[in-house]
Image 1: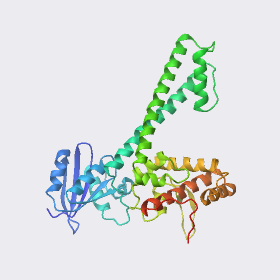
Image 2: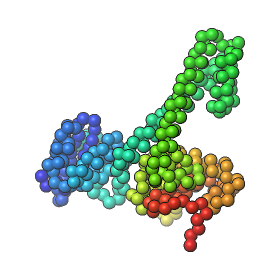
Image 3: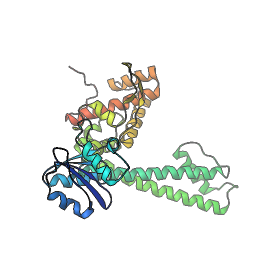
Image 4: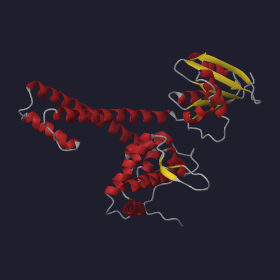
Length: 341
């Protein structure tokens, strides 16, 4: 088999392999069971293999690299443009084999097992936080059915439920009160589990040198630092800080024509979780930065005075992402009052 490029369409059990020679001639196009994939590529000469970046793709990339192949993970939205005809496994694999040779498609960095461990930690924590938010919303909605409304904020809702435990309002029946107490118990259990994961995240930050370096930036705590390192590693795959900010969806969309540049809102692509954490951190810096003297905060506050809170928040998140790239990719430490020589 003289294939030099493969497109591998992965799935749960049935994979499809599309291989082409240097001339572009198709030399293999067949399906393989999951247990046959590694044995197939172990008998194939070293080649370039393209895989869509999806669930399980990082595992297969690491395994194929161990066999001596060169593997590129491709964003699915770019591969889709190469699909010809109806969607089938064969057409998908052929599209991957064609897209992997394109120099315009930026490959996705292959995660290490340590990065995947940290990502799993964040995903479980995020699910618990979402469950807690949903539970609080349900409690407020059910209380509203009985004419009981508490002010905004989880602390005020928690105190209101504690007072109801001592003296229930007359509008609540005994059965309704028992159900609300059960919901309160579920809330407390979620708080304990989230607190446990917060400790794990803090421990992961203490044991990771990259996360410790960017934890020193304003608006970036242990959660954002570990989430960013889990997503991009040392960020050397990005040529500049702007590429990292663009990868996180913090750069504007563009609709230009006829030599006239038109910039729109941020495109919101890439890792939505890390982008959310950066924006929340930037908003915190603006809210509590009145007495700060470092140039970054003063610049952000000046921009807020001219352009408003929302524009300044996204601009500061963009700048934080760029600074994170400089700290990670250039192996430097953050200096709040650093000035260019």
